[in-house]
Amino acid sequence: MNNILVVNINWLGDAVFSIPVFKTLKKTYPQARLTCLCAPRVKEVLQYCPYVDKIIVYDERGRHRYPWRKLGLIASLRKKKFDAAFLLHRSLTRSLMVYLAGVPLRIGYSKTPGLLTHPVAMAAEDMHRCDYYLKAVEGFGIKVQDRTCELRLKAEDIQSLRTKLANAGLKPMKDYVVLNPGGNWDLKRWGPDAFAQLAKRLNEQFDLPVVFSGGHHDRELCRHIMKISGVKGVVMAGETALGESLALYKQALGVISADSGPLHLAHSVGGNIIGIYGSTRPEITGPRGGGRSIILFNEIGCNKAPCYHLACGSNVCMKSVTVSDVAQAFEKLRS
Image 1 (cartoon, rainbow, N blue to C red):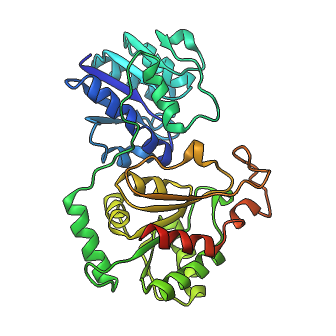
Image 2 (cartoon, rainbow, N blue to C red):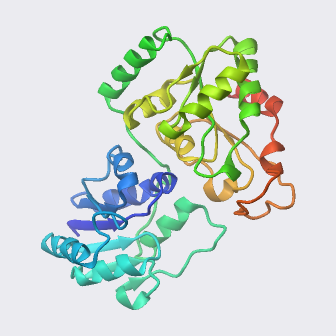
């Protein structure tokens, strides 16, 4: 096979977990050109994956919302004459698009297996997400040799980050720790008061500056945490492009975060991380990158399986991980 399409998933963390799929296909078919069909929100992440040759955006809620736009995309896919397509999650729309694009080999998951030439049986719910996506290629008889998630930094991003940190008042080459307090839903977040206490303890106990990371929507949260902590930190939330964020995570002594996209991004570039888990399970969405990692998780009864009770008012699973737990984990991480 010389021309392969991978139909990817929609979320940042899952995009990171899909990287071993591209690595496996590239090692199995080294001459092949790998194209990824993905949602707009994960395009930038995949641009840092060394095994993806081309990215095609499928914007199902925007540009490709209307049927005639989908037909235009299908026509474009048909012209590219793909030899095979691997579908990493169940989607009637995507499997139909690949079918109509005339791709001769269609492998993976689908809500309508008849649209595929090689449908793969649904994986177990408690399987790690990385292994779930890899099963889509294993179902075609391809052997997986490396399950590590890997993103590669660019030299210009490292230099750009150093300039931004210096402009923010952090001395060049100064050691620092990154706190990422955000998350795509509240149930997975560790509380702002806990992050504030942690920031103060890290600053006092280890004499380390604290850098807060996240997106534009996390900026006020980071500023609030810094204010109540009494620590003079650096808020980089919303101030860094993706490549600069990757450099920020890689060069930190440690990145401390709940189960979130930034946690997995940090680990995928070889950064050292502490993951705080509660409503999600480490064996399903734990980090799979190349850095050192310490996962803090307490099974308290209601989180024996991943919990999606978004209206939970107590968030006791996350609160069961204490500031002392995290501080001790950081001491171990840097030793």
